[in-house]
Amino acid sequence: MTAQASYSLPEGIVGLTGPVEKPAPGTLPLRGDLAHIALAKHYLAAHYVIPQLRNIGDTPATLMLAMRDDAEVGATLDAGQEVEVLDCAGDWAWVACGPEGPSGYIRLGMLAASE
Image (tube, rainbow, N blue to C red):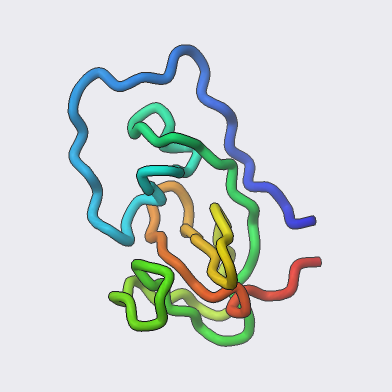
């Protein structure tokens, strides 16, 4: 089991008071179906997740903006860097460097083995 990031659930009613600007891809950990729990007070998503902490493996990892090897490239993460895993699908993980991003997809094999 991986360590859980320390984020608390929002208190009170979570709702939007007006339109919000959609962030650029690869920035905030926000998709239409899922968002980082720390964004619950500011962005609407179908589900919110408390991320699991993991580390990048022995080589740097490039965040992709979609789950494809030929997708647009986002940020590059250093080997050993701690990341927050928000979702896994197939052999891809959607990760973020905290609620402010950057966020993107990496192959699960780019993560260090969990303890």
